[in-house]
Amino acid sequence: MNTKNININDTEKVINKIKTCANNNDIKQCLSEMTRIIHCEYYLFAIIYPHSMIKPDVSIIDNYPEKWRKYYDDAELLKYDPIVDYSNSYHSPINWNVFENKSIKKKYPNVIKEAKESGLITGFSFPIHTANNGFGMLSFAHSDKDIYTDSLFLHACKNVPLMLPFLVDNYRKINTTPKKLDVDLTKREKECLVWASEGKSTWDISKILGCSERTVTFHLTNAQMKLNTTNRCQSISKAILTGAIDCPYFKKLSK
Image (cartoon, rainbow, N blue to C red; front, side, top):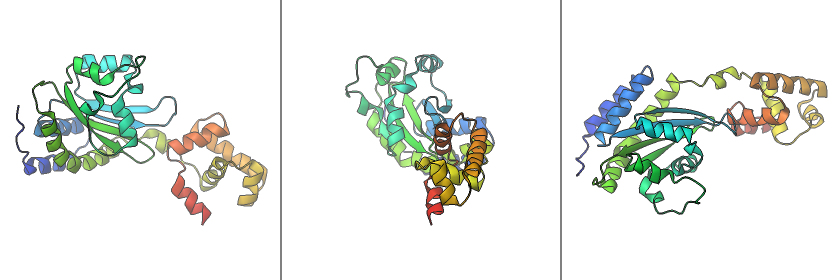
């Protein structure tokens, strides 16, 4: 199967359509259009928000085979998926065939091989990185065994990066993360958490901020309630993961 040249007008039309998306159904239609113009069958758009180190929030829009998706979720293949691991660490598009010959420990599932057996014969992914430490991927796949994957991948690399930023931005507008909105920390609460994350004790923080230890404890307790955590360590971790406090904020405090 030979891929046809992609009409740049098609890409522009999809971009304009993405800009007008009002809900996830609109996003899904745009994903279908993107999949069509790069001559693929399947798509998966996923964003992973690490609000918890143990169980992150995962948002997915896809048209993958239902049987595969159910098995993937039931077997918790997210833990072993090389595409997820790659997307968390890199920004460049990746062709799945890169992982076909890589050694995998026998005790772990071979996700790429099992995906092939479920009809996702060839595929490639575009990593996504968002604010507040979120990441994910936009993946495309095909069930045709005879398709020339490298050519398909090259065509996608010329067009998907033009559309992807608009898709991610509008998706975030439509799906604003509730947990982020619920965490409305005051300036003092952020300051206390930031210094606590630097290993400072309550006494240290009181001297740095020029207040009493009781005041520091008060602010940290309030932050803990807002973050819905049980102790100072968890409060620091969750505040960093959700973006309630971050490095730019610490730099501002240090000036």
